[in-house]
Length: 148
Picture 1: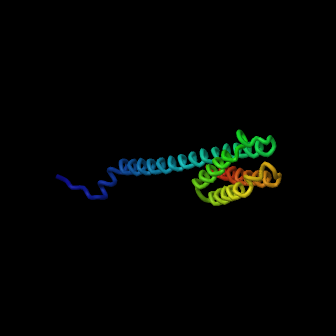
Picture 2: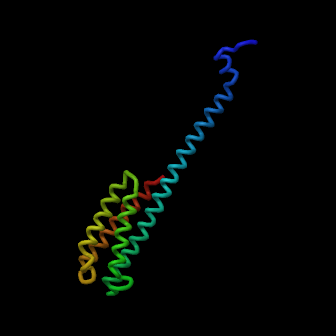
Picture 3: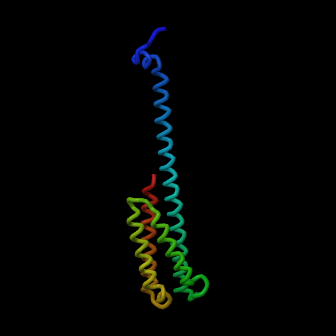
C-alpha cells in the first residue's frame, strides 16, 4: 500500500476542492443577495402603503375643509387611523433614511393632534396638515430612490 502526502492529495483533488469552494461561496452570496432583495421589497411595500395613506389623509383634509363633509369622507376619525398607520409604517423603515421618515411622521402626528379640530374652520390648520403630509411624502420618495 502506498501512502500519499497531503500535498500530493491536494494536488490530485485540486479541481474538487476548488469546485467545493466555488459552490459554497456562490451559495453564501446567493443567500445574502436574496435577503437584501427581500428587505428592499419589504421597504418598497411599506413605502408605497405610506404614499397611499398620505393620499387618503389628504382626501380627508380636502373633504373636511372644502366640502364641509365632517361625517363621511372628511371624518377626522378616519384621518386619525391614517396618521397612526403612517407613523407605524415609518417606524419599520431601515437606516439611513429611517430617521428622516420617523421624524417627519412624528411631526405629522403632532401637527394632526394640534390642528385636526380646526381644519374645517381654519385654512392655516389645513395648510399645516398638508405641509406635514408633503414632508412625509418627500422623505418616503427619498427612501424609495435610495433602495437598490
